[in-house]
Image 1 (cartoon, rainbow, N blue to C red):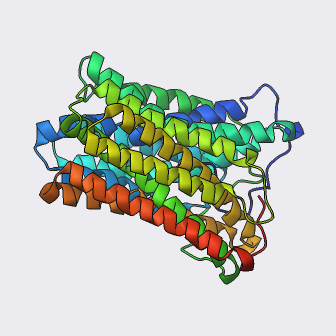
Image 2: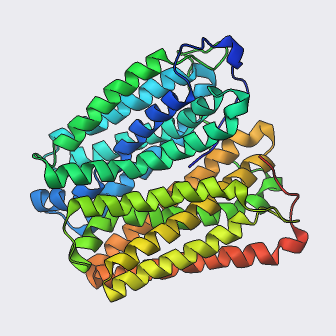
Length: 419
C-alpha cells in the first residue's frame, strides 16, 4: 500500500546533491521495507500447525491474527508522524527491532500469550514501516526516478506482505522445524536490513532522535469528508478480503478444499498480494475523466467480481476458482486503495494531512481485523463454508454500495483531488 508518511514534512527531504552517491539508495530502502513487512504475514501458513500443537479454535486463530491490526492502529495514532521529527533511520531501526521481537515471540511460543504478543509487536513494526518506509524510499530517489520509487514502495509493501507466507509455506512444507526455521530465516533478513539502514543517508533535515512522540489522533476535516467517506469504505472492503486470505486461508484450503500443502497455501496468499501490487501500479494509468479518479469505482467493481468468485470457490470446492477470485479481488483492492488514498491525501489541507491519512489507515486496518473475527465466530457455529459465503456476500454489498454512492454524488462532487 503506497502512501505518504502521515506528517507535514513529507517534502522536507534533502536533495539528491546533498547525499553521497556511494551510499545505498531507494532500492536498498525498498528492500528493508519488504524484509520488515514480510514478517507480518510470515505466520499465515503456520496457523494450522499452531492449532494442532496448542489446540485452539478457528475463532482464536482470527483473534490472534487481528491483534496485529490493533498494534498497527495504535502505532498510527500515537507515533504515525514521528519520523518527521526523529528522522527516518531511528524509526526504521525501531520497526526492525519490533519485527525481531515478534519473531522471538513466535520462536518461544508455547501458548497463546506469546502468539498474541508476537502479533501485536508485528503490528507495531508494520505501523512504523508503512509510513517511514514509504517516505524513505521516495525521498532517496532522484526527481527523475520518483515515479519508479513510488512503484518500488508499493511493491516493497505488498510484495513483502506476499513473500512472508510464500517463504514460510515452502520452508514449513519442505524443510525441517516448520515452526522454527521460518522465523530464524526472517531474523537473518532483519539483521541484513539493519546493516542497510545504518548505511542509508538520513533524509530529514535536523533530525531529533530523542524527540518525544506527539499523538495525532483521528481527524477528518469537514471539506474532505465527501472524498474520505467512499474511499475509506472501499479500503475497508478491500482490506477485509486481504484479512480473509491472511488469517483463514490455511483453514479454507485444508478443511474446505482438501489442500494441506503449506507451500500451496503460501503461494495462494502471495498471488493475492501480487495482484494488489499490480492494481496499485495500474491505478495511475487509468484514463482520467471529468470527475474523480475512475479507478476507485472500477476497483470496487473488480473487487466485487473477485469476492463473488471466492464465495463460489467455497460453494463449488474449487481451488482454481479460489486463486482466480483472490487475484481478481486483490487487483480490485489495489486499484481502489491507491485511488482512494490519492484522493484523500490530495484533498486534505496540509495542516491536517497527517491526521486525515492516519484516519484513512485506521479504517482500512479495522477492515483487516473486525470482519475476519466475525468469520471465525461464524465458523464455530455455521462452518467455514457458510461463514465464508456470508463474508463474501457482505464485502460485495459494501463495495457495490460504494459504487452507487460515488455515482449518486457525482453531479455534486467535490473538486477533484490530485496527489
